[in-house]
Length: 282
Ligand code: HMG
Ligand code: MG
Image (cartoon, rainbow, N blue to C red; front, side):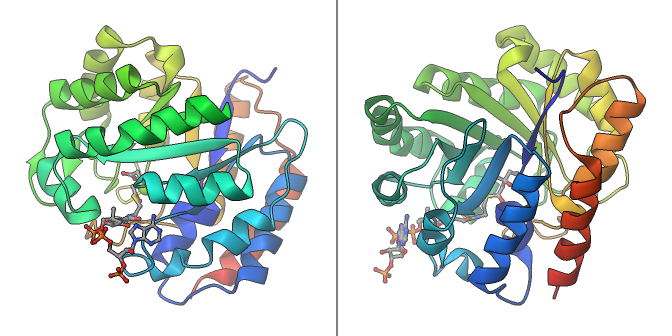
């Protein structure tokens, strides 16, 4: 077992923010390269409304084109029961629900309040249990919000706890706009790890300010061993103005391995995937 688990979100968080719609066959080719690099967790697409995120409109074809494999967890983002049902009908290993520590961001991104989002996720949690698939939860804007500014660390911890109570086996704490400082991340993780075991938490950094790897180091200090990243540093959120790319997978892997942590990732194959991902940028 590697020391660190990398959750590759490039095919979803990366490509959802590209101006051009990446053809399905290119998405599948990218996923194949990521599989070859032995990334153990792939967030392949989002079963969201194509009216809201046209870049993910081919979600059924992308999931269908990503067959199960030993040691691989294929995850998809689902905003509601409808998305979960569609993904389960095809076959998936993990459903990922997503809400926010900021009320305004929840409204802008999923058109409901935080409390409403938790209620919306209950049938998804029941489906995940019934189908024996993992349930992951995201908390966006855990440190900063593009609309509300700084977010109280306790607000992030509260929403993470609500997701855990719902049945999420893992909660990813996100710096959605990539402007969090190491001090802000430290305060947010201090609050979250007071409520939840660090083994249940992941960190999801965007890299707008070039501080994502510093924030990884802070998270390592809090016992976090699961990190989300996107190949080639693709990404952003269409409903988070100013959100730049995700933390890039290759520098993350090299940073962690340089510190003596194993990741299980094949770096030569990851380089190939990165070169391909960069070519997909609009
Ligand atoms: P709504 O407009 O309130 O809901 O959207 P609605 O039920 O009225 O649906 C609107 C339309 O979408 C309808 O179509 C539905 O049928 C359809 P119409 O009848 O008008 O033709 N629809 C769907 N289609 C396919 N699959 C579905 C689905 N649901 C409805 N599952 C809703 C509410 C939640 C659906 C919408 O707000 C939405 O899809 N939001 C997703 C936004 C999004 O994907 N944002 C980016 C991902 S989050 C992120 O990037 C952050 C993260 O990376 C962590 C971080 O960095 O912070 C995870
Ligand atoms: Mg993100």
